[in-house]
Length: 362
Image (cartoon, rainbow, N blue to C red; front, side, top):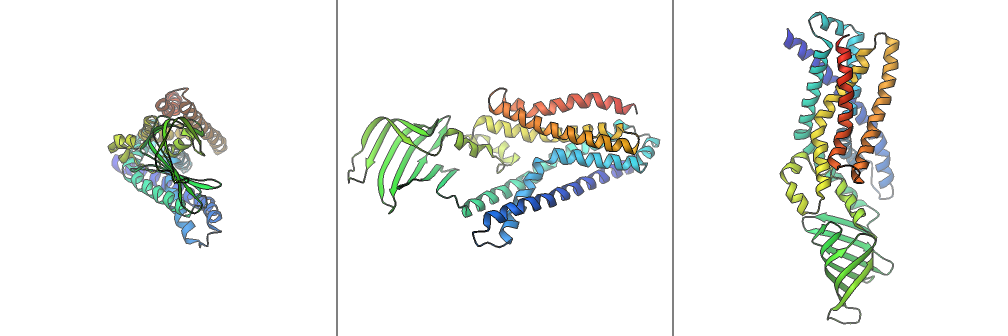
């Protein structure tokens, strides 16, 4: 009998999650599709490509919103089984509030693990395709940055010339083993600059030692310069924003290729932040079910349901902004980045530990 009841609870809960996810997908398609159409409207592209890119983008968005999707799904499901007297029937069969919450929370936890190991690798590949396709059609091709296994490549179009910068890697605030080519509008090389290390703290790059080859005057021998400087559209902060979007890296890739990603220039702090985000996801989903149960099971009448739903929406918004605030504190070095990921989860966990004791007595 217990297996049948457990199967009934889990299947009903998963159906509710799927329905909420489908609703979010529909809303996401509507909102993002208009953005993609606006992007492609002057590129003689039909509706097919914008729709395809939207479908590549939405699954990753779903994973980001998964804690709040689980929260809403839990609220809907618990209120529904309470309204149709199923909750009362479950108590007759010996199921306490705590046991029901435990079953749904563990289901969410396992759903989070399934997402990390099976769904996330697929969504990461989809985001990678999305970014590559958008880059290919991007109108803003005058200034492009590519960071891959071949190093760092930066293209900048100035008023009278084109500058192409190649570097082996980014190390702290320096580009290492740098070669800069400057070409005229006729695609002829004007000069080449080489340096072992370039400080890119700000938009004025500084070279402690630089070798400048001036081809414009047909001068092939390098001119060695000390404290040489060069203006650029990029600095270390702007380049690091490329690393902050690690959506193209799956959880499995992060585990198996951690050192390789570091060698490619990814910051250890940002990799640790992303890794902690992944690891904390199942725990976050677990706690969001508990939090939803505190709001939904606490109410008695239908009028109270509306009140608690309103309060839960406010609580959901507070968690969302607290999570952003915590990450911002970590990124500004006020607190460790890894701790900034776990702070909202710890706060929700403390609140749930108090509330779950109260609802178990009902």
